[in-house]
Length: 189
Image 1 (spheres, rainbow, N blue to C red):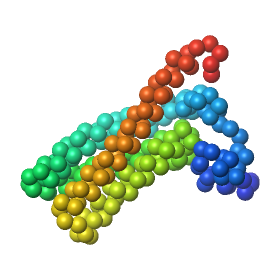
Image 2: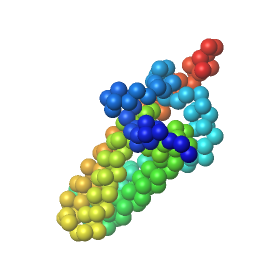
Image 3: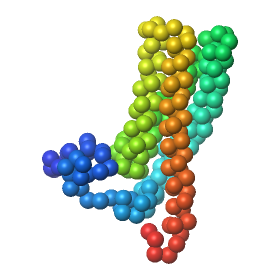
Image 4: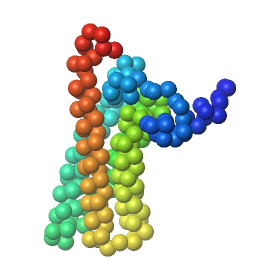
């Protein structure tokens, strides 16, 4: 394998703006057309088993989030149900880890890199914050660092970040769905 220094740096530099990092990388097809996927990336997305996995995990995680948010808010309002709320946050966090791991496999299959593909750069960056907050919850739980109320407030903070991140992905999905009619038009790749 003969890899140049530039090729090596480009594998680690995932910024969607090559000029800001001093690179002179060729402009991606998607940057020129404003499309999320090139035709080849769309083909890889449609044939990847990870697409189905993501399609199943995302609504399941959202359902777990709704249940957990309800239990956390119930605890904060009444002081009852700490154990149920805690278990629900841990389950929600497990779903988050599962969707992040399988999502990185999906990104690798579609874009050739595990995370921070230019098409999903900001969604992935914000996902790191979401993962960090959920992981901080688990750490504080294991280390007994916070009171029950503080733990639930940390959980709500993690959930708020999750909602923003989920909205990012839904907006991206909407953009992709708007592309489909454009792809069917003559002369559009």
